[in-house]
Amino acid sequence: MNRLTSEQRAKVISRLIEGNSVRSTVRITGVAKKTVMRLVFEVGTFCAEYQNRVFQNLKCERMQVDECWSFVFAKQKNVTPDIASKNPGAGDAWLWAAIDADTKLVPCWLIGKRDPESARDFIEDLAGRLSNRIQLTSDGLKLYIKAVDKAFGGDVDYAMLVKVYGKLEGDEKRYSPAVCIGCQSHAVTGTPDPKHINTSYIERQNLSVRMTVRRFTRLTNAFSKKIENHAAATALGYFAYNFIKIHSTLRTTPAMAAGVTDRLWEVSDLVSAWEAEERNEEKAA
Image 1 (tube, one colour):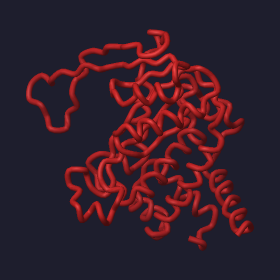
Image 2: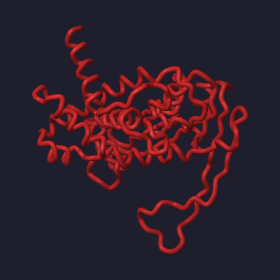
Image 3: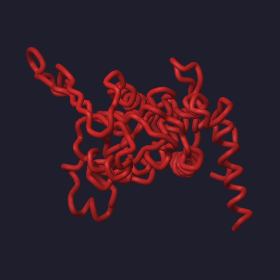
Image 4: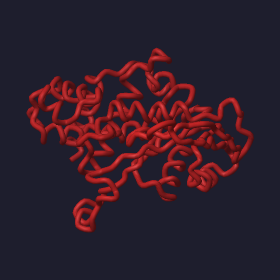
């Protein structure tokens, strides 16, 4: 790891944020697999800490939240007691994420289970990053109701968008998704504007995650073996989305649109910031 130059590090990170797997990154860059894995963990940890630090007092107005399924080591149904004892994070690993409908910024996310504790932690994290009252839209997951009430109290305009699904016409294929035949919106708290009760942006963002963070790609063997690496890769993916990649509609990055930064980041900037943090930690030690 210490033998890699800044340019080599940037080359590895560039491949990863474009959706390459660890093995394909190894083939393209010639960097050893263990080195790539260590790089993912360390730079991903830095990305998580940096975004946690700068995403504060955000002036968002319309937020959308959703969950995205993934797994670590093995799918939940295949996790045996022996696997669970050796790999505490094995099984389903749900990604809870929020997006600002205007700037497209993703200010917070959480890797956890689809349970009340994860819902509470995620919504409390979101509420703590905002500086004003917002309109919030979620899907029909009932876990949100109590979590939103506890985190926001009555200081939110919150609505649920419940989708109604039907069966496919003709022979149903194994991997074909159910067909959405309608939506029902329900105001839960406050007076949400019906025109902005929507989850399309966060659902589209979930697709971006599956397309660019290789560990979320379905029907592949690129899944994470450890929950720590899964979380680090997710943080790296969101850093690239928020700071490095120009949004096709905004013509700028979400972080610039939200006023978090005034410049377009490049992968080399990420590497420089991470290496500066490393040097500071070494001096402090």
